[in-house]
Length: 147
Image (cartoon, rainbow, N blue to C red; front, side, top):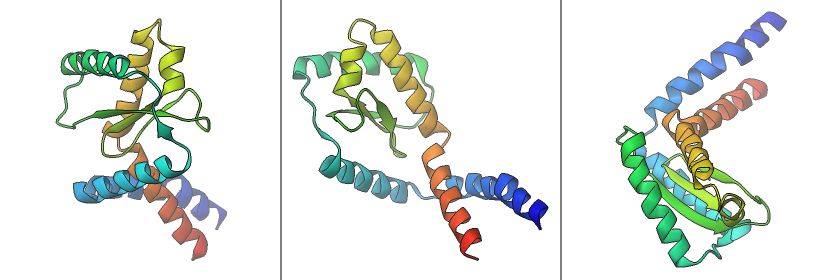
């Protein structure tokens, strides 16, 4: 029994999660992402305090670099937010929305390439469907434990 449980949690559930993440319709991913950002905006995120010119300059530069670096059909959108809860951080939603906190932009204001590297890291999470796999693993684990 311990070997079966170990194998289930170590191999079976992650394999099921990978398969599940690949079959989720884009419409469901959009809804989940929109609701997640809405909930975060109501709780731990607030509008960015960065000047519009700073945001526009960053976005312009970022989108130019993205055309050269990322070969994908996925559309990415950057959102700037202020957050005392997250501090200097960035995260990606499953639909390709990348949220960057003002503190992170200010931390790397003298080294934008480092900030772009963080954005590319977040893109990796979207491309490999880490969020959807995590949700699937959590759901499958709950079902197994409840069973």
